[in-house]
Image (cartoon, rainbow, N blue to C red; front, side, top):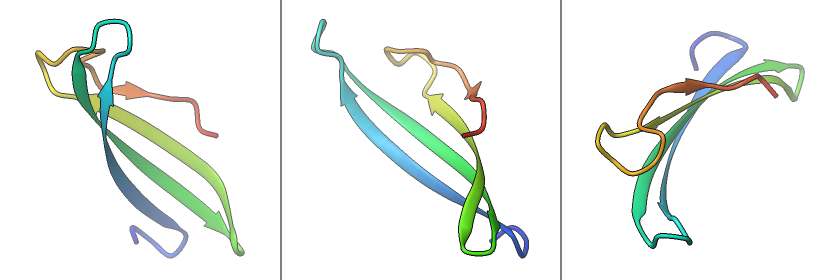
Length: 64
């Protein structure tokens, strides 16, 4: 918990690009805001290691 109504979740995905067969590891960090018993906002940030196949940058997505 970050505060009374906010928490974070970290997930790491090991992906294989079908077209090339290369693998990449991407980490997603989600910061979620809760109202009542519902998640009302998620801000997701993705990261892949520098030099890894794929985007290689930190990207902020539009909250869900």
